[in-house]
Length: 267
Image 1 (cartoon, rainbow, N blue to C red):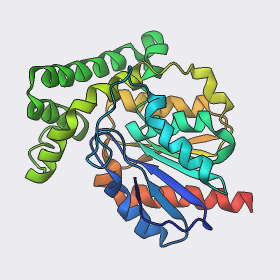
Image 2 (image 1 turned 45 degrees about the vertical axis):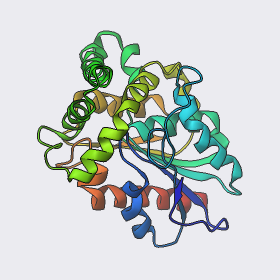
Image 3 (image 1 turned 120 degrees about the horizontal axis):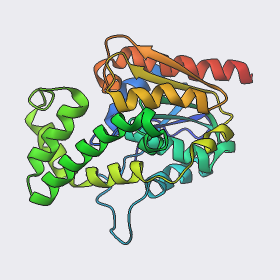
């Protein structure tokens, strides 16, 4: 787990990165906050700092969220949860487990794919799209074509050519990580939480999506505010699914503003 600030007297922000990324995704957010909060950025299974899932049983979103829940339990004050994509799914799971420990939530295109399969015909096309990229990634892993699996994954979420634009060191890191990707997809798709459970999250929530969001995460982002009693949606102009990286200044400013607004309301 990486932490850019460890002062326990300050309110903590727990920022959860997307699949295939790491704690450094949130470094610019930490710089923007300028020490006003303690930014904690735990990394997920599959990252070099954490290592692979133990394999002792079928992997679930609750397994990934367990360390975030532990961090919440150690804090003196309620935390602000931030999550991007897979990290957004993990943040939602942690919030459901510790709702009274969370002051606010900010989610950028959370990949709560289990919601799509509960939408019937309204989410059928989007759910099929996710099943397709999940299958292509898993097939590459099973075949031993880890680089090809990573390329397919990155080009889906970042757009055609996103893989080729990455530095060789980043491509190598993603190739090492990609055996975890099928576990992430499975955990998100088979998460058992019913849509009705989100009504219990009476927590100020900001949902962000890129203007050019992929159809599945666009639909999820647009649906969540109707499920959560204190949630709102903002569209980030010109951004896609990787907005927290490609449009970090705009996204981080929105995160900081939402947290500051909640602090103002709570004062």
